[in-house]
Amino acid sequence: NNVLVRIEHLRKYFPIKEGFMQVKNVQAVEDVSFSIREGETLGLVGESGCGKTTLGRTILRLHEPTAGKIYYRDKDITKEKMLPYRRKMQIIFQDPSASLDPRKTVCEIVGEAIDIHKLASGKTERIEKIQDLLTQVGLNSEHCNRYPHEFSGGQQQRIGIARALAVQPEFIVCDEPISALDVSIQSQIVNMLEDMQQERNLTYLFIAHDLSVVRHISNRIGVMYLGNLVELAESNELNRHPLHPYTKTLLSAVPIPDPVRSRERKRIILEGDIPSPMNPPSGCRFHTRCPYATGRCKEEVPELRELSPDHFAACHIL
Ligand code: SF4
Image 1 (cartoon, rainbow, N blue to C red):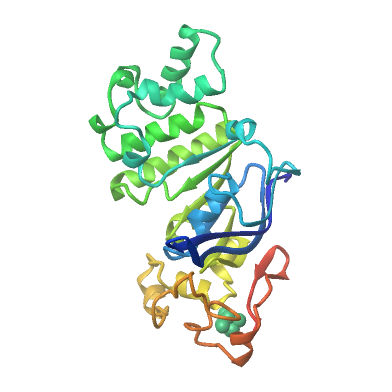
Image 2 (image 1 turned 135 degrees about the vertical axis):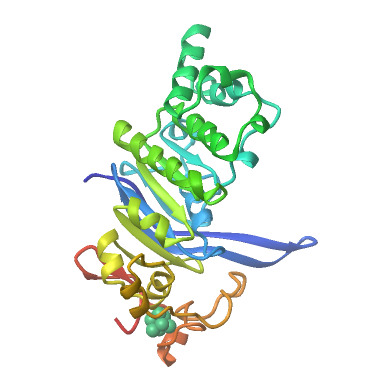
């Protein structure tokens, strides 16, 4: 498949200031490179604080990158004016209630993007487009004049999806779109996103903290730890043959429905908390928690290498 989005050595640091002095940087994303292929879902997983949300937003330039490059269809957009790309690149947020303006009706929320990008030639076309979008996400035209607080969490997320789809994007960052929702409606939203992808040939970067969510819907999965991409592989390959010690830990926490296999598998519990991205460990950032760490791991940053076709990992012992 063609590459739609490519990032090269992307970094995002947030300066921490005390008074007028810059004291330190939070190194949220550190030297991450990968490509997203047209029509695929690339899952991105890792514990909270690993930088996956910052990475998703930096790709969309909702945060400006500290260093590195972002390409869209081979065009370097790192410093481009973003308005034309906002149409192509959208985001669905984790918390729908916080991402919808409480003072605006559904019609205004979904219509805003149509207006910014001048996608309707008159009032009638505009309202038809909005109603059509609402129907597509399982709402109806009667919902048009209501406010976000009148909806359930699942319905609010449907409004967020309608807003993202309003500009007919090609690429959507789905930033933990189901983690704030009831378990009972999570699968409905995931199924809807999958249907939309089929119908519109969408490309997703699907961010989640839980491998059990992304492994079913992703073509490939990237694993992040403390700002670094530590492993990237096709979804089945990653599930069957995880290479990086951190990925093995994440996979050991995913429940297995088969009770025999479940008994056989040992859950790996990591010692300690995820270190602060303000003061990340030297060398391999995982060395403070890795059961296989050696002296080299403390000194040398492991490079992400292709260890089998299309399977990349960053670890000195592989
Ligand atoms: Fe563990 Fe060393 Fe590999 Fe890092 S490089 S994951 S510390 S063995």
